Image (tube, rainbow, N blue to C red; front, side, top):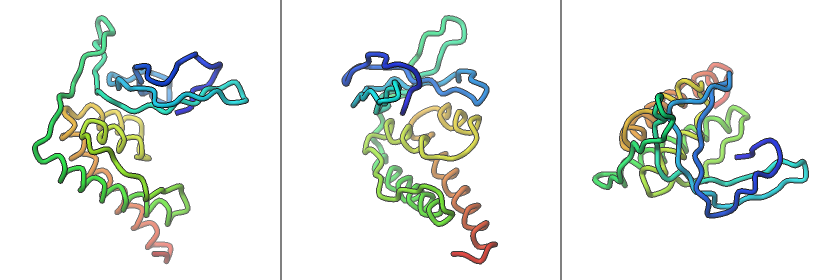
Length: 167
């Protein structure tokens, strides 16, 4: 992610809380505790950070403290991540066919918590729907919901493209 403004002095290895904001700049009730993998100061005075989500948290509306939502899950995760990856590839291919950026070579993490955050970052849907997806309980819940959203969006894109005579 690229953050506007001056370099905040964050470094690789630091933990950060990433909050999703609405288009009206209202913070959401869900955030991600992430780990900065790389930090780079750009010539424009902005800083570019690569952050990997590690833990989904809800933000307590009273005290503002992040509270963990996720616990590690393993039962059936490999199959669900595989299905999510397939749905994501089809979605990205449909985006590419529509002339949008669509990188079908990306791989989701084998960690279901990380994968559920990653897949949400690829979706080009409304902010409230992304927020709803991120608030969907466990990583398993989020991945299952993401597969449905990816299939729906892929179908819509293919329908629009088919209507224009392209495949």
